[in-house]
Image (tube, rainbow, N blue to C red; front, side, top):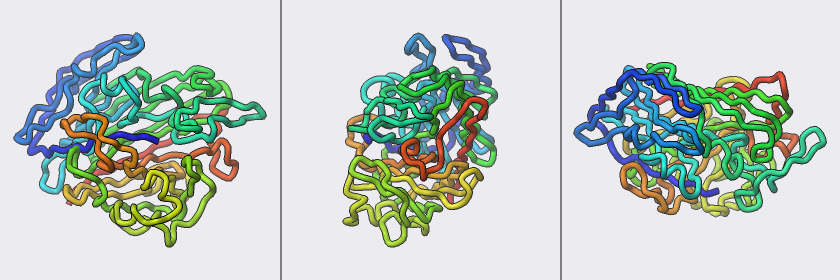
Length: 396
């Protein structure tokens, strides 16, 4: 699967977010931007959030925009309702200077035009792959787009990453996004009402909460696809980042990245039970690392799949920024930027060079609708899909 990134290069000495309260309604978007209307002012390092005006466009007859969240510790997040994407995420490093740890563009056109990079996007109706673009539910076979070689990937040709979500800014720390995926959209059954809530807490947590209901049996697997570089965009590759994943098992895959079962990580390059550099064993000759020459695999997290649990901890080797990920999901996908090909210019003017970002996508397992041994992704009328993932940031 092709992913593109952009390392976030700059560090900030101090950034001040100035905002004007306003209420705006346009298209299907409801906006209540209290102190979140303007971009961060430039600091000595000249690092700032993208300009809001660069995201105020009309796409598919609906209004796009950029929303800013900020907490008392000066963590700042910029999110666009085009694809429900995290555009920028400013976090203090070990010296106290802000670093944008999220890869992305500084305008909505770069997200909307060309091949979808999935940078920062909300992914659905089904995150990751479904083999051959087919699954059977209640005796009926459904056919989906095969947009990743012979397989279906991240919801299809458009998915949730290329639609305009209705947006409501609750306050300067909370943004609600909603979308109705209609029956048979991208081949999936059921009218699916989806709500994604981004919350930035004063404990330096970015919470992403998902809810969905349907009027017909369907499959659902939502995730966020932020590309991270904890040293900052433009700072080089991520191979020196120290990674720990709380998983004793993972899904080996075939040549098209469809899982072939569940195996132990012991004595394999997939063992991140102890903190290890992402690049420490990435070139090991191992049958599961031949495709893309890197990681693009789901880990089976330890613990009950329904409970909030520590999934992964990552630390930038230069910035000292640490990100802990807790989730209610049973799995997490590690992607090491294998398909980044320097084809895009990012916020800082740098390119999305090979392995200059990584992804850790909390999720149910790839191809679950075709693999009964995996946790079910079926959602039925009367049920509510509900799951939360929390990213907590610190530095030392």
